[in-house]
Length: 170
Image (cartoon, rainbow, N blue to C red; front, side, top):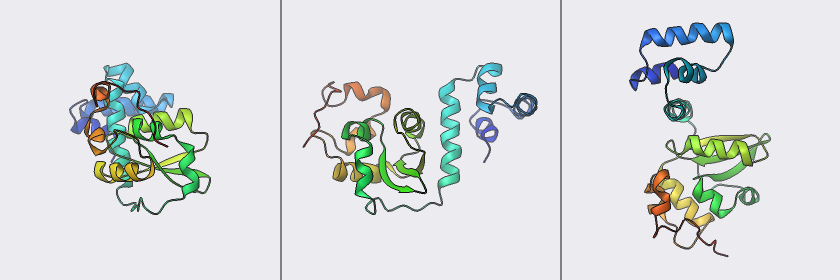
Protein backbone atom coordinates (compact mmCIF):
# COMPACT_ATOMS: atom_id res chain seq x y z
CA UNK A 1 0.00 0.00 0.00
CA UNK A 2 1.40 3.37 -1.01
CA UNK A 3 1.51 6.43 1.21
CA UNK A 4 -0.72 8.41 -1.15
CA UNK A 5 -3.39 5.71 -1.06
CA UNK A 6 -3.40 5.76 2.73
CA UNK A 7 -3.75 9.54 2.77
CA UNK A 8 -6.64 9.34 0.31
CA UNK A 9 -8.37 6.70 2.44
CA UNK A 10 -7.95 8.84 5.54
CA UNK A 11 -9.42 11.89 3.77
CA UNK A 12 -6.25 13.98 3.82
CA UNK A 13 -5.82 14.04 0.03
CA UNK A 14 -7.79 13.26 -3.10
CA UNK A 15 -6.46 11.26 -6.05
CA UNK A 16 -5.74 14.34 -8.15
CA UNK A 17 -3.60 15.80 -5.36
CA UNK A 18 -1.68 12.52 -5.09
CA UNK A 19 -0.93 12.64 -8.83
CA UNK A 20 0.29 16.25 -8.50
CA UNK A 21 2.54 15.30 -5.59
CA UNK A 22 3.96 12.33 -7.51
CA UNK A 23 4.72 14.57 -10.51
CA UNK A 24 6.51 17.06 -8.26
CA UNK A 25 8.36 14.23 -6.53
CA UNK A 26 9.64 12.89 -9.86
CA UNK A 27 11.04 16.28 -10.82
CA UNK A 28 12.41 17.29 -7.42
CA UNK A 29 13.28 13.95 -5.75
CA UNK A 30 11.81 15.33 -2.51
CA UNK A 31 10.01 13.00 -0.10
CA UNK A 32 6.30 12.48 -0.71
CA UNK A 33 5.42 13.51 2.85
CA UNK A 34 7.42 16.73 2.69
CA UNK A 35 5.58 17.76 -0.47
CA UNK A 36 2.23 16.98 1.20
CA UNK A 37 3.11 19.19 4.14
CA UNK A 38 4.33 22.10 2.03
CA UNK A 39 1.83 22.01 -0.81
CA UNK A 40 -1.37 21.04 1.03
CA UNK A 41 -0.60 21.95 4.65
CA UNK A 42 -1.04 18.41 5.92
CA UNK A 43 0.17 18.14 9.50
CA UNK A 44 3.39 16.16 9.97
CA UNK A 45 1.68 13.91 12.54
CA UNK A 46 -0.86 12.82 9.89
CA UNK A 47 2.00 11.99 7.51
CA UNK A 48 3.78 10.03 10.26
CA UNK A 49 0.63 8.07 11.09
CA UNK A 50 0.10 7.25 7.41
CA UNK A 51 3.71 6.12 7.22
CA UNK A 52 3.19 3.93 10.32
CA UNK A 53 0.12 2.39 8.66
CA UNK A 54 2.18 1.71 5.54
CA UNK A 55 4.99 0.16 7.59
CA UNK A 56 2.50 -1.97 9.51
CA UNK A 57 1.02 -3.21 6.25
CA UNK A 58 4.48 -4.23 5.04
CA UNK A 59 5.48 -6.02 8.26
CA UNK A 60 2.28 -7.90 9.11
CA UNK A 61 3.73 -11.18 7.87
CA UNK A 62 6.81 -11.07 10.12
CA UNK A 63 6.16 -13.42 13.06
CA UNK A 64 7.98 -12.65 16.30
CA UNK A 65 8.32 -14.46 19.61
CA UNK A 66 9.18 -11.83 22.22
CA UNK A 67 10.39 -14.50 24.64
CA UNK A 68 13.03 -15.59 22.11
CA UNK A 69 15.47 -12.70 22.46
CA UNK A 70 19.17 -12.05 22.93
CA UNK A 71 19.76 -10.75 26.48
CA UNK A 72 22.89 -8.95 25.24
CA UNK A 73 20.77 -6.32 23.47
CA UNK A 74 18.76 -5.36 26.56
CA UNK A 75 21.42 -2.87 27.66
CA UNK A 76 20.98 -0.88 24.44
CA UNK A 77 17.98 0.90 26.01
CA UNK A 78 17.28 1.76 29.63
CA UNK A 79 14.12 0.71 31.44
CA UNK A 80 12.83 4.25 31.23
CA UNK A 81 13.49 4.44 27.48
CA UNK A 82 11.85 1.07 26.85
CA UNK A 83 8.64 2.18 28.59
CA UNK A 84 8.66 5.82 27.48
CA UNK A 85 9.22 5.06 23.81
CA UNK A 86 7.42 1.70 23.92
CA UNK A 87 10.26 -0.28 22.40
CA UNK A 88 11.65 -3.71 23.13
CA UNK A 89 15.06 -4.80 21.79
CA UNK A 90 14.96 -8.36 20.47
CA UNK A 91 18.25 -9.21 18.75
CA UNK A 92 20.93 -8.07 16.33
CA UNK A 93 20.34 -9.31 12.80
CA UNK A 94 22.94 -8.59 10.10
CA UNK A 95 24.20 -5.52 11.96
CA UNK A 96 20.74 -4.06 12.67
CA UNK A 97 18.88 -4.06 15.97
CA UNK A 98 15.44 -5.64 15.80
CA UNK A 99 13.00 -3.71 17.98
CA UNK A 100 9.37 -4.45 18.78
CA UNK A 101 6.78 -1.70 19.15
CA UNK A 102 3.12 -1.16 18.30
CA UNK A 103 1.71 0.37 15.15
CA UNK A 104 0.41 3.34 17.14
CA UNK A 105 3.80 3.97 18.73
CA UNK A 106 5.94 3.43 15.63
CA UNK A 107 6.50 7.10 14.70
CA UNK A 108 7.71 8.03 18.19
CA UNK A 109 9.78 4.84 18.51
CA UNK A 110 11.42 5.50 15.16
CA UNK A 111 12.31 9.10 16.05
CA UNK A 112 13.90 7.89 19.29
CA UNK A 113 15.80 5.04 17.64
CA UNK A 114 17.19 7.24 14.87
CA UNK A 115 18.43 9.87 17.33
CA UNK A 116 19.70 7.73 20.20
CA UNK A 117 20.51 4.16 19.21
CA UNK A 118 23.89 4.04 17.51
CA UNK A 119 23.16 1.17 15.11
CA UNK A 120 20.68 0.62 12.27
CA UNK A 121 17.29 -0.59 13.48
CA UNK A 122 14.26 -2.31 12.06
CA UNK A 123 10.91 -2.76 13.72
CA UNK A 124 8.49 -5.60 14.13
CA UNK A 125 4.99 -4.69 15.20
CA UNK A 126 3.19 -6.40 18.05
CA UNK A 127 -0.01 -5.81 19.97
CA UNK A 128 -0.10 -3.54 23.01
CA UNK A 129 -0.73 -6.57 25.23
CA UNK A 130 2.27 -8.46 23.86
CA UNK A 131 4.54 -5.45 24.30
CA UNK A 132 3.31 -4.72 27.82
CA UNK A 133 3.84 -8.32 28.94
CA UNK A 134 7.37 -8.40 27.57
CA UNK A 135 8.26 -4.99 29.05
CA UNK A 136 7.00 -6.07 32.48
CA UNK A 137 9.22 -9.18 32.32
CA UNK A 138 12.37 -7.67 30.85
CA UNK A 139 12.26 -4.04 32.02
CA UNK A 140 10.31 -4.08 35.30
CA UNK A 141 9.74 -0.67 36.86
CA UNK A 142 7.88 0.25 40.00
CA UNK A 143 4.38 1.42 39.05
CA UNK A 144 4.65 0.39 35.40
CA UNK A 145 2.18 -2.11 34.04
CA UNK A 146 0.06 -2.75 30.97
CA UNK A 147 -2.24 0.17 31.83
CA UNK A 148 0.64 2.54 31.03
CA UNK A 149 0.62 1.40 27.42
CA UNK A 150 -3.11 2.08 27.19
CA UNK A 151 -2.49 5.70 28.13
CA UNK A 152 -1.98 7.81 24.99
CA UNK A 153 1.44 9.44 24.67
CA UNK A 154 0.10 12.96 25.21
CA UNK A 155 -1.57 11.98 28.51
CA UNK A 156 1.40 10.23 30.10
CA UNK A 157 2.24 13.18 32.35
CA UNK A 158 -1.02 12.64 34.24
CA UNK A 159 -0.63 8.84 34.41
CA UNK A 160 0.14 7.36 37.85
CA UNK A 161 -0.53 10.52 39.81
CA UNK A 162 1.07 12.95 37.39
CA UNK A 163 4.67 12.02 38.18
CA UNK A 164 6.42 11.17 34.92
CA UNK A 165 9.75 10.73 36.74
CA UNK A 166 9.59 7.10 37.80
CA UNK A 167 12.38 5.31 39.64
CA UNK A 168 13.87 2.34 37.91
CA UNK A 169 13.83 -0.83 39.95
CA UNK A 170 17.06 -2.70 40.52
